[in-house]
Image (cartoon, one colour):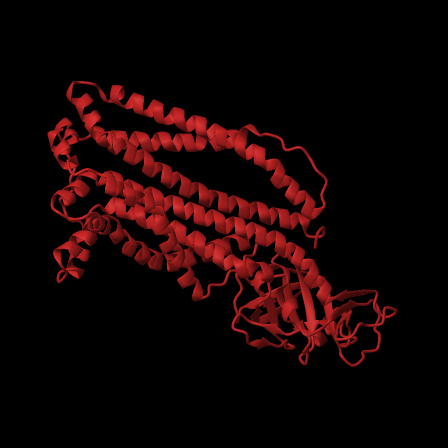
Length: 512
C-alpha cells in the first residue's frame, strides 16, 4: 500500500488538491470582490465631489486603481513566498509517509505568474467595473444619501409572507432583502460555507472506506494465496483472482467467489447482501463511479483477447480497488478453457493456514493496523479541512455582517432617533440575517449535495480518484448548528459597533 499504488495515489492527491484549491480561491475572490465593491461604494461622496468640480473619469479612477492594485500586489507576492516557505514541510510530510527520496522544490515562472497576476487581473477588473458603474451616475446622485426605495421581487415575496405581521417585524425582514444583489452575495456566502462544512462532515466516514473497505466487516481472520491447489479444510473458503482483465481499456481485477461464501460478503449501499451468479457480475462502487455503471447495465470484459459480456447484478459498496466479482466456477471455466471449474488461488480462513501450502498469508488484523497509519494521516488532512472550512465560513459571515453595519450607519442612527433601544436595533439589523442564514443553509444543502455529486463523478471519471461520500441526516443538524455558532461569533464585533453608532449620524448624513 505504500509503494505499489504510489503513482496513482500522488496523481489522485494532486487532482484533489487542485480541485480544493480552485474552490477555496473562488471563495477568496468573492470575498475580495465584495470588499473592493463596498470600499468604492463608501467613497461615493468623494467621487461625486470630484466629478462635480470637473475631474475626468480617468483622473478619478486612476488613484483608486493604483491603491488597490499596489496593495494587492504586495499581499499576493507575500502570499506566494509564504506558500513557498510552507511547501518544504508539506513535502517532508509526504516523503516520510510514502518513504520516498527527497528532491529540491523548484520555482516555476508559470506558477508565480498564475499565483500573482491572475488574481491581480481579477481585482483590476472588479475595481474597474465598480468605478465604471459609479461614474455612470450623476454627481448629484453620488453626493446624495443612497436609499433604495424600490421593491424587488424578493421584497414583494417576503412582504406577502409578512402581510399580517407587526410593522417592526416587517421592517426587520424586509430591510435585509431590499437589495437583491447584496442578498445574492449573502446567499452565495452561506452556500460556500455550507458546501465546505457538508464536505468535511461527509469525508469523515470516507477515510475508512477508502483504506479498510469491506475488510472491517468481513468474518475471516486470514487471507492466503497459493500457486497450487491444496486441499481445503474446515473454516476455509476459496476464491480466484485474475488482475489482468480490461474494461474500456482500463485494467481491472476479476475475482471469483462461491455463491455460498460467508466469510467475505458483498453488500450494496443499502446493506443488502449481493451473491455472485454464473451469468451476472457484481462491480465495486469505485469502478462503477469511474465508468458510470449502474445495476442492469451490460459490462463488456476483455479477457485474454476474448470479449465477454455480463449484465451487472449489483454495485458492491467497496472503494478499495477496481474489482469485478463473478462466480468462481464461471471464472475458473474461462481461465482453464473449459477444463475445470474448481480453480482457486486464494482462500479466506478463520484459522491460520499451513505455510507449506500457502506462500503468502495476510492477517486481517494486520491489514487493519496498517490502514490505521493511513487513517491517522488522512484524519489529519480532514481535520485541517474542517478547520479551514470553519475559518472560511467565519470569514465570509464576518465580512458580510461587518459590511451590513457599515452600509447601514444612517438607518441604525435613524432607528435610535426614533426611540428604539440598542437591543431592538441589533435585532432589527442583524438578527433578521440569522433567519435568512438558516434558511439559506437549508436551501444550500441540496445544492451542495448536487455539486459534490458532480465533483465525485468528475474526479472518478477524469482523474481516477473516488471519494466515497455519504450524507447522513444528522449532518443537517450539525450544519445548522455550525452556521448558527459561526453567525453569532462573526456578528460579535458588528453588535458592538452598532452600540457605538451615535444618534447624530443621521443629521450628519443630511448636512453633507
